[in-house]
Every structure is written in structure tokens, then in C-alpha cells.
Length: 238
Image (cartoon, rainbow, N blue to C red):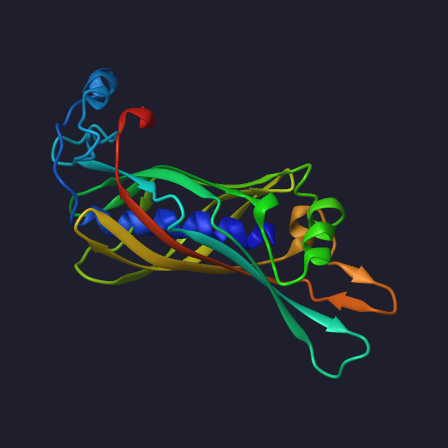
């Protein structure tokens, strides 16, 4: 389930890349004056100093829109008294994140950090949700899934873009590199899209759930992030 959430974080990063192709231009500068310039940037325009120090590059800040992004997980459950497996799905809209989208001949996503509150994941079965919080994922102890990425190069172009994004994801106190497939689209100041990946629970220090004689769960989590991000204030990125 943590896995689902992380993917969602990655999806947002990817979306930012798409926006880079159509973002507003900002004031370029070197590392010594980036902080002062970014602090005075408009919170509505999203214009920022590109951290690369490249005078030809500009950057736009993007933030996830509350209640318009959703992270989810899907795992395969096998009840021992049934012939066919069941797909258990959990979802949450508690997704927060931001990133810089640097325009230019080669768009780049930088300083991206996405956080999902795993305690808020809900499915169609409250007992499953409680067991995930207390016994398996232990989200009451490790509440957040975090994904971070820097210097991620993305394809340039207009309209919908599809690409892979790699970064560091932290779940259950364990940090690993993960790659997501992202499809996104920039429309005005808003980026929307979807990011997906598959991860293993054992890689993050917890076993696939099992209840002897009743239920087994396959160790493989499909994570999906449907995201919406808009231009925002760049001061926080310095």
C-alpha cells in the first residue's frame, strides 16, 4: 500500500516535467542571488530562478492541488475458501508535493518532494485498513510515503507526454530507488496526469499479509497516482 502512495509522488514529478515545455519565463541568475530573486517571485506566476545557473533557462514552481490528486494501491488477495483471487484496492487524497520545472531545450524537473499520508488509505474493508495500519504496513508508526527527485530530464513537446521517472522513495523507514511510468498534460497553469509502478513489500521491510487458513496476499503492489498540480510560489525551493 505504501508503494501505491509513492508512485503517486513520482507521478507528480513527471507532470512537472511536462509543464516545463510551456512554463512562464523567470529571471535568470547565479547561485549567489537565487534566494533573493526567488523570494520576490510572484506566487501566481510561478516564475523562479533556475538552480542550474544557466542564463538561458527559467523555472516554474508547481504544487499539488488539495483534494484533486489521489494515490492508490492494488494487491491480489486469495481467500482459501474461494476459487478466484480478489483485487484489494485502497485510496487516499492526502497527497502533498511541489517541484521546479526548468524549461529549455532539455526540460528538467528539480527539487521535487511528494508526501502521501498512508494512515488515510481506505478500502472497502475497515478490518483490512486497520490491519495495514497496525500490523503490516505499520502506517501508524511510519505514517508517510515520501518520494524525492532531482535533475530529472524529460522529453520536450506539446500535448500529452509519456516517459519514465526514477527517484528515491521512502516507505516503512526504508529508502529505495523506484521508476514510474508517467503520462501527463499541461493546460494553462495546470498539469494533470497519471503515474504507475509496481513494487515489492519485502523490499521495504514488511511481509505480504497472510492469515493462516483464511487469506494470503501476493507480494506485488500496483501503485497509481492520478495527479493535478498548479503553478505556485517558488521561494520554498531555495
